[in-house]
Amino acid sequence: MLVDGPNMLRKEFQINLEEIRDVLKDYGDVKIGKVFLNQYASEKLVEAVANQGFEPVICTTDVDVMLAIEGMEIVHNPTIDTLALVTRDADFKPLLSKANEKGKETIVFGAEPGFSVALKNSADYVIILENGIMTNYDSVKEERKHVVMEENPDTT
View 1 (tube, helix red, strand yellow):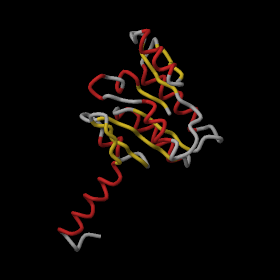
View 2 (cartoon, helix red, strand yellow):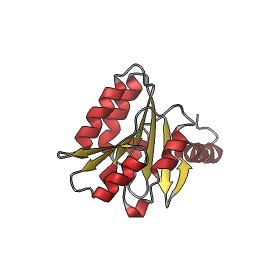
View 3 (cartoon, helix red, strand yellow):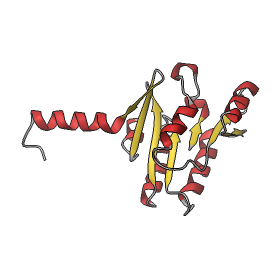
């Protein structure tokens, strides 16, 4: 599980990392839990991340670059079969594509507003965090697909 801290750990999103980890346990063992933060992250935030059992990674350069590098290491690690990202950022679409190409399952937790549609459509599983509540995007997609099918029965 790789977390885009500056993009996701905002008061307005009410992200609970422990709840996300608990949801991920339904998909398998969580072997890696890293939260990428920029150099402006408060000591209180860094301590809170560590106290929840995650590894805070303080980046003096662009957080996205460091997260993508770590993600590629996971993609090429034969002992890990799933890549989970906590982000809204479309910049990670190529990482998800490479993970899928290498046979990894992909899970993205994102928040609204501003969750990239391209990112949603690139992952195997998508969970939307809205006002502290998790919604499975796949079920939302299926409902929309079903409605379209009913409205136009000739669609295959």
